[in-house]
Amino acid sequence: MSLDFKFAPDDFGGFFRDETFRDTFTYRNSDPRRFPFPFDRDDYMYSVNMEPHVPGRKGTAFEHMLDVDEHYIAEMIDRAKVLAEDPLRCQSLPHMTLAGWDTLELIMEAKARDYPQWFSLTKDGNRWHWVNRPLGIEQSFTFLDESTLPYPPFEYIMRQTQGDWTLQDERDGTLWMDAGIATSQADWSVDFDVGMNFHEWHAPVPLAHEKGVFDRALKFLLKLQHGAPVRRFNWTMTVNPLLDTAPETYPKWGPSKTTITQENMGKKQHLRVELQSLYRLPRSNAIAFDIRCYLCSFEQIVTVPKWARRLHRVIRDLPVELATYKGFIRNRDAMVEWLSQYDDGAPTSPGWFPDD
Image 1 (spheres, rainbow, N blue to C red):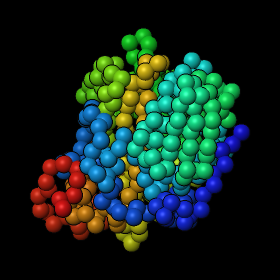
Image 2 (tube, helix red, strand yellow; image 1 turned 180 degrees about the horizontal axis):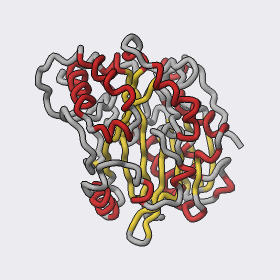
Image 3 (cartoon, rainbow, N blue to C red; image 1 turned 120 degrees about the horizontal axis):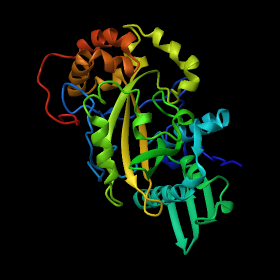
């Protein structure tokens, strides 16, 4: 079974970039100011930091519920390559099939509503017709009938959706990660985590447990209502614009951390941001967790003076435990040195967005 992508770089007015997240690393943001910079102040510590996931400022990653940007096609091509090499990056336990259909509906409806030039969905009872123009996909199927799709519903829609997703089943007073896909993750594994409960899969995070962050987060999420999604940020660092930083492939990408110098820092070092959103699903009552990955090189970040100052201060003052957990303790001092040249000591305004 396969989804055949039919894409030419000049299609769609040149909006979608023809780029790579491996080998030649031609990924780049056409407009760095669109990047969802994750720091609203000059320091950072883990927190629940949830807010309503509602449409936001136009021209940003927050404009629509699901952000389909210039990297969409390249990310889907990269995802297909990862799944071809390792099918276990996408897993769903048998009892999560209904949650997969819920997720398929959520994503198809959102994309057809917010990007009608690229996606369309028509329904005649349970007979649905889906068109994904960027990927050249057209599919008629029967909703809730797996035999009418080339993949199970969760995998089918994930092969057309940016970001990693997990599905949490609620039982025994907690959440269980019983389905997921991860091809752009920050060093975690679906194959390892599937079947774990909320506290088990968050166990490696330092400091946050002692501060009660995950106890509060779980209490909050168990009360999440359908139609009232929420979002938060997470972040780390990546050498080169590499989407697939999985533990399974660490021998391939881990050694790149030793290649950073003051001369190549701006081009090679990337801030990796996860815009995480959570949705209560209507039929299964599961929670869908969207972990959308964005990358931006240091040389592009420092084109925004406020971000340049703030990133320097956050990295400089980050607790050692967090820099170690996030995997960049080796290069932290070098990052601080390079970023310091863009920090003139001026105060920064509150919030994430640039000043102008």
